[in-house]
Length: 327
Image 1 (cartoon, rainbow, N blue to C red):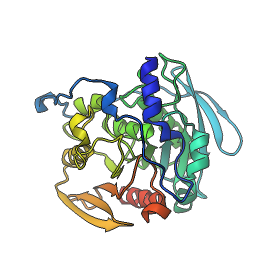
Image 2: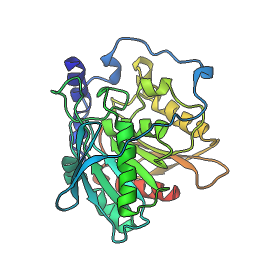
Image 3: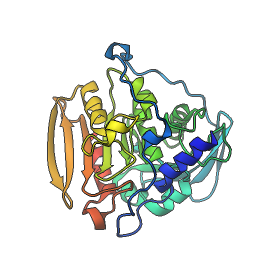
């Protein structure tokens, strides 16, 4: 288990530091996810896929303690989590975004580097940064999310559902407009939330994320949830058909994942446009114009939160533009 934690730490090191300088971070040198195991990926038979998302039951949070400046702590299944809430001027009826850090991060560290609330609050969104937890089987591991890749045993899907419900009740947020935005390991977790918790989360945004093999192999045949994926062209953590990295990876190619999300949600149309400094924004659409899936392929992007000075794209604004289509 310690070996797994070490590999994950190498893999997802960028998860605790994102955005904040005008230059793109150096190329990720950690091994791709395929190095975690030498087993070849096997595709499950289509008939084995469940027809509908499984219902994940969530118990209420306990030991909720309010701190200063929006900070609070809570406990779920005996695991303590620290959070920071940034509220818009009008909180009642507001949409809610849970923000999930990368591996080894915290709510505080991710907020201090990203400040996603600066773009979201003026547009009426409530933003809550959430801290994950170490692997329960390895206390030396860093904070992370049980996305289906590491941190096994933490009931993070149920916890995040419970947290969302608590926040909806406490601040009177709109229960139909709850979203999750994650980076790296936090982005892996957003794919799991879309698969298992669409009754709570209307849409998710995955920045430098992938869908772990475990989640892919138990995927639903139909879904009702929005997905926006942001992928760096040179991200060597996320498997891609475009560069051949998916051929040796356990996890599915991100292009196949996005095709799956679109098809399982009944979307058949697809178009693309160039934005920023040569990046491609692919939009999946259907007869329901409100239902859209986006995939941003960042030109020369790596395993990072795309920065406007380097990419010509205001990532925070683009994420909010997508979420606006889901409201």
